[in-house]
Image (cartoon, rainbow, N blue to C red):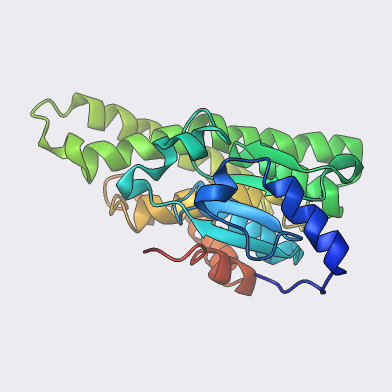
Length: 249
């Protein structure tokens, strides 16, 4: 949550007026309307954006959206993200200097990378390869690991039929194998360069073996390169900060 330089009162007033057009700001008012507004909760999807913001040093103001109280389903939040999920942002200084609202963590990562010129390669081939790995996380890692969490830790663990859990465990092992092969000869998913592909994926692997307690289920100890990559990521100060933002109630 990096601090921002004070803006002239007229400029700040304009920002406040711009943000007032978004219903969510009535429920979660902006104390710093000149900063990017983050609406999130520290889940694997939510921390992608807080980690990214900490890494790039862009001033922002976080707002805790308590998913345990279904706050993503109230009208003010749905006006920002009709899909009712976190995270979402409003950038008061979007393209052309106009406010921009965005949801979907992958889209937000790409937007922030392009806005700041950080953590996304400039070379076109490298750029699309990085985005490819972001989409891999969005389409495969997140949904599959999340199902393991449901069937192993949450309500699904009471199901007598264990075939759904086993299906997602097997697929999680396969996906970890994809990461293992990718990381066999490189520090990060894109080689020497830490990128939004790593940011998108770190929190999900951490959750699978940590919060979900599924390390033994997916035979995590049999992998070498994925745990080393995760440890490198978690050692980054910006990652450590971002994992705790926004604060839980």
